[in-house]
Figure 1: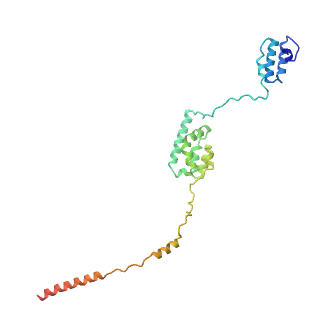
Figure 2: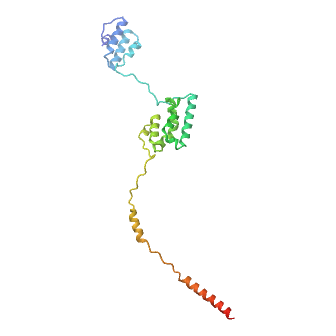
Figure 3: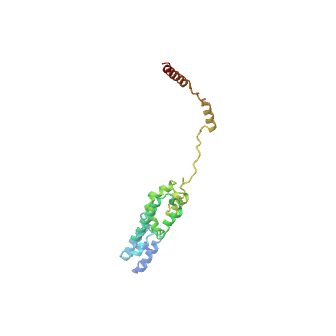
Length: 224
């Protein structure tokens, strides 16, 4: 089978006709047949196929290769935005030292939602700088539920949206088996001993002996 049989046309010197036959046959050719058609085209025209013909060898349903992208890098901030991020971080760290104001979600919103700190790039940078300190505190229930929920939504930390808050919880009663107060009182009454009477007799006897000695002394002095 010669090149003309593969191309499906009669021998001709018309390059355009050869190219049309090549492209037509290539649409239905497998990879092995495509190589044979390319060789037949070379033999029929005495030249390599055009670049457009070579691209036609790619099956029409083959998706184009997508460029590989690495992990998304944080957007680099300009000098002004970086300064704003630093100032916000300083304010948040100062807020953490004030336990009363730190329980108020409105205070957090006033600091973090104030422009330009509410811009996505700045929010991401502030979240990156505070995450190692702020996120564990919120996850461990240091803040009220309102503050924890706001931080989870604002910084897009999903774990905070379901984080339990131990702040303000009532202390659960201890269910261990302690004796009832009435039982303890009854036992105390059983162990209670009657008060012991104080023995005053030694003091009385001593007082009598002293009085007798003084009487004898004064009696001797009177007799003399």
